[in-house]
Image 1: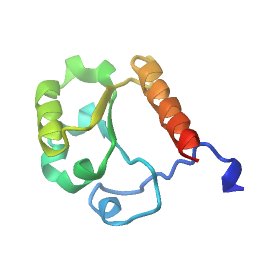
Image 2 (image 1 turned 60 degrees about the horizontal axis):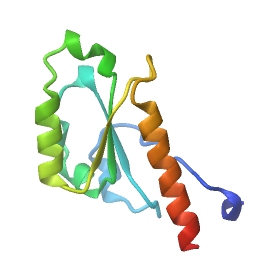
Image 3 (image 1 turned 90 degrees about the vertical axis):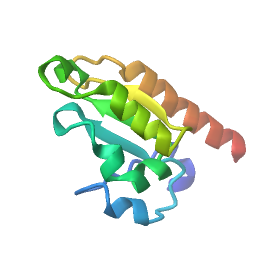
Image 4 (image 1 turned 180 degrees about the horizontal axis):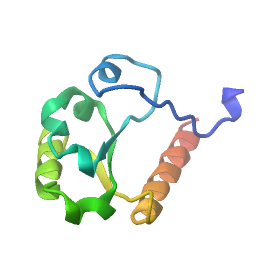
Length: 115
């Protein structure tokens, strides 16, 4: 019963090109990028970043072992969509997850208030 559901997550399978073109009735879109996969994702997939509400930059615990440029990816993403909320997270260490969870809770609260 979706009337009683506060949060429903739809995970994309594959690349970031296809999901940007489909409206699934979602309230928010979140893009997840991974440090080892590189900082070029906003440039490669601008439509996805344009339609997103938030970006998760995951695996920040690996940042020191890569040439990933955090400043560049944030600048590129915000140039495409200045309203993006960007979260630096590590699912391994838990770093940044509280801020991400707080944002999710706030989105749920806003939706409840609208209804």
